[in-house]
Image (cartoon, rainbow, N blue to C red):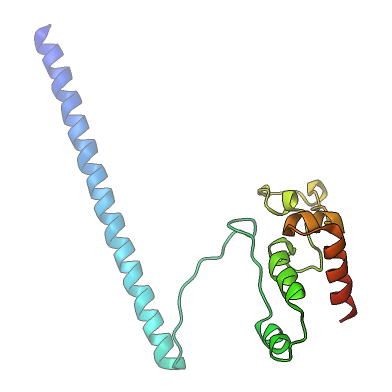
Length: 160
């Protein structure tokens, strides 16, 4: 009986050793194939640079709901407005502070609560809840100004 028990223990040890070696082999093969892939990508990028004279990179498409909210400033427009002193300091401050709440690809200023809440993945179109557009009072609270001052600045920018 002890002999059978020893055989079972030895078999378990041998199986564990075989499993460890198999995992190590898989890991080695994976790292070799990823190195080969990296070398292929580098040679393709070098070839692209040789052909076009421009540096390229390989990127991965990102999930549209992943990461941080994105906002882009129209630099040339802002530069022109600054050079001709078109905006008052209060208007510049307002535009800078409100950027974080602009909804991408729209003309809507979104309430803070809706702007920074996590969006669900795999949203069914009919199930999607639109973010709430901010009122003047909401905007004033978000940028730390009174409602009256915020309204005056917004009207001034609207006229311009």
